[in-house]
Image 1 (cartoon, rainbow, N blue to C red):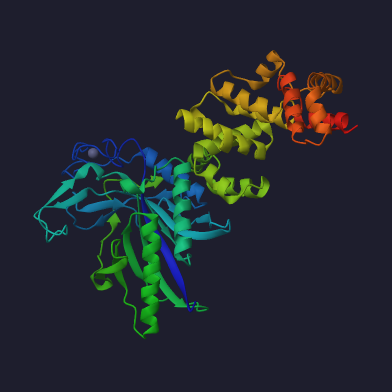
Image 2: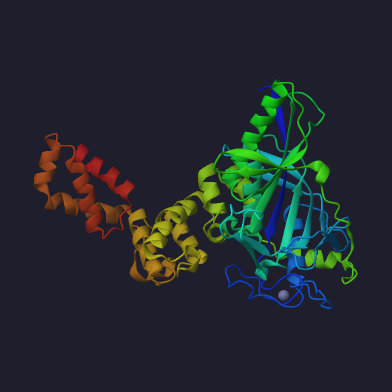
Length: 484
Ligand SMILES: [Zn+2]
């Protein structure tokens, strides 16, 4: 590799508040066009915006999740530009005093290596409406017969995360975005559905000779809406820029689009035509004051972050990357798992149950684990019973099925029905002797060299004990008796 890539990401994430950013209209995807609108989000003269408190709380949560600074004072600014799907002809955004500043996204690669990418800021703004260009044209405005505008999305709270250029490959950029997505999902601020447009991202890409400290000229790839597109677009752009430098050409700073079908970036506009947004403080909105008490109140409600779980699961519990990611990417299951471990005190055995038998029961019944009748308390009891060798794995399986059916505490069932495993030597000896006496022919066969009869005899002892015998103890005792 002759060149090193330098990549920064900007992404927009729709917040999943009940209502829009500055009015009471519902924030819902998929409704009939222009049914979730009012004078405020349609930009009618004389209407006044009122900030959504939940959206501001979500911003504080995101800031805390990424260890960003949450300044005491913050304000909204108007970003002026004309676009048909933006009814006010300006967007309410944040310019020089965003709700969060700095911060870092710690993410992991497929092999489990943890990397860091600093954040410049996360600010809050409102989304625009959505235009659909239709008719006989080619889908671009100029070639279409007509355009339709849906304002349901206008005014939906939108978080913009801007990263520092700390990423060095398409792989890192995608791993960073996956981390951003799983974290925002885990802290409950967005459902981050790329297919519904609630996460959209742009990438700044430049390259420089390996070892160089100065940045090359960057290009910006706009509006990619899948992680696959991000990976392909960045790889394609790195290859294009490398070929240009190899040929002695100069890279032009420009905005690019990504053509998924052809697998290439396309020039959209050069930087000379960049907008001057004429930002100024929105006179309809007073500056925000975020007290330390308010931040502390939000912090107190935060559950463990994905990166914290990742470090605990891999380092403390010794789980592999695949199982760790599987748990973390289902936040409700991870929460269920954590609460179970508090009771069972045995992470590995708990994970075996959660990702094994319990997941199987969930798949078969179509009921999610955290909504099933099996509580973390009860599963924790079951795991502890197995670990203490009070019950064997066969009884544990049967108990789990009964817990799934709503029978409650396994500890109570074991006590009530006397299911505790028998390791009392006298009782085991009685079971073994009973089986040996009743199966004299099999014992003869075993002694004549048919060693596979042994398994049958173990099974017979387990059956005689009604499944309660400790299989390891049965094995040892049988070998002792038959060996003579
Ligand atoms: Zn509205």
